Image (cartoon, rainbow, N blue to C red; front, top):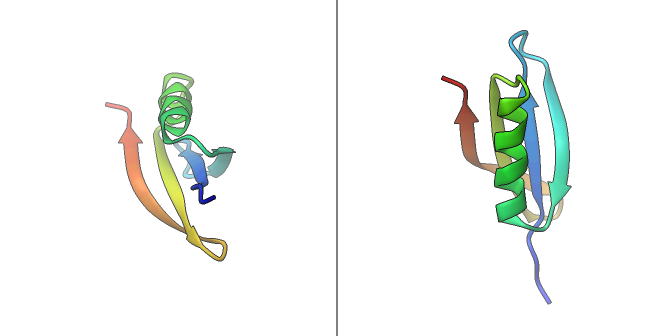
Length: 64
């Protein structure tokens, strides 16, 4: 059985980046990213595992 893993990241106005959470659900990853924006993050993005621990950015969200 194959499944994908998503990481949700955020950045604040000072450029500090923080891992919010990891999930197997793309839908949940989007909800987490949008929630972080509503809570003050300047930018959020979702990365998808590409195999062997490597990740690629697949979506980005910004306030404003």
